Length: 176
Length: 393
Image (cartoon, rainbow over all chains, first blue to last red; front, side, top):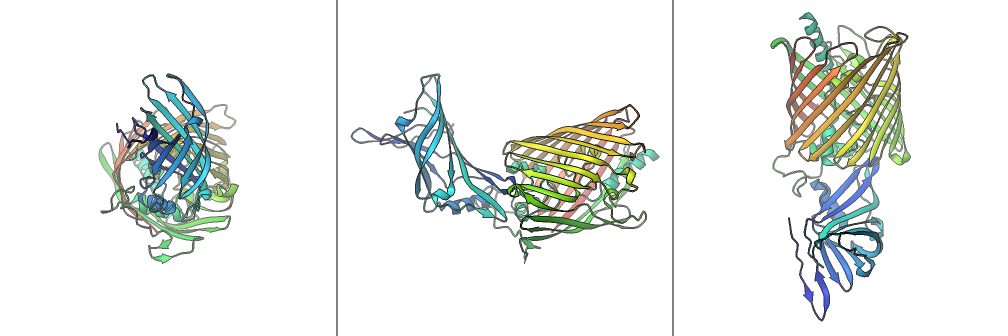
């Protein structure tokens, strides 16, 4: 089990705090294309911060893996990872309902998503399961249109990818 | 012994002329066939994307890492004939050659050994806007002609063979294809092992069991389906032997590497090839593919076989099963095995079979395969060894 401990910054109160993830986080990006093509890209790199009353989710994009090396290279090129190495989702903490121990909550929360250097509002559907020992199991999903972020829908050898992208994030939080 | 030799001859005859369809590509997240194949349910013709995946995923790589590593996967030469002749994207010519050598044994004694000319075909597919067409024409040797796909009808010399030719239009935004012609019958796993009990008993292999008809196929990211009106195989004479009816399947993806499906087929002929009586033949079944770990793919199919001589008041009930394991320890090198069973309505015995072998995709467009097949349960046990070399453009 991999533990990710992020830097903690305290200056005049809690300005930015890392959150401890107690298990492998998974970020899954799903795309669909012509002729029933389904592509999934996965990364286990996820940083979560609490910053200015926002929950901030940062995903380094350089290791997003679709299972095929050449396709990964095309993906990184499309996302221009060299100039925009990460995606960032910000959700106001107040918009998230944290359940009591042993309970769960599920709702939609507004947020802002930054990809490819472009920031757009988005809606995140989330489910939080609060464990009895303090751990929180979280799943969040959102649907975006890559064109809103200045990304052209990819096309390769006659196969076209739809601009709609489904993003799903799963992780377990032990701290915060 | 003469009967066993005759059965072996028929089995070897049926082994001639195989083509390409690799349901194990589900290990790479490809639950759909239409991403890579011109036939939306999988088959011989590869589209440009499919040719690229053939280079990137199917064949062995030498010193360039795994297919998912960043080092792997140079830009493929797909779209170029012989790897260097550029072609327009709307026209994709192809050629296929498959040669083999077979040994057949009965009760442990070799009774037949010979070279097999399995396939020598040329073909092309065209895509002009929404219009699509594909056709292939081949040579069938005197011993190796797939009789149900022959165009000429010499019984002593070579024949022209046409397994597949159709024209159609894309519908539903390109996700659907409506076509007419000689088409693979949509049923079950489209596995390469066309002499397997499930393919032979349901008469749905894609070596020679294609038939004339009209088909509609649709491919969505989570499911795919095809239905076909069977209008009869014009390679079969006289007309009384031609089966007419319907067939189809639907497959649901349970995830990127798992899928389950159901199939059905009902066809009537005025004369069964076996009994010469008017017959309604039906088959219904389920199939599944799953890759729990990328090097491993499991495939299974179970079919119920119903055969009813019309007017007799009786119905023969049988079944056929197939369970296949494909292990790819190194890219391009496959170790495979399968267990199968079959009981046709007309025989009381359950036949069993076990397959094992190696399959090596040596280079893009070239593969070698060795099979050992043991069968028992009806008559003396038989063993077949088959090695084959396949190349395609």
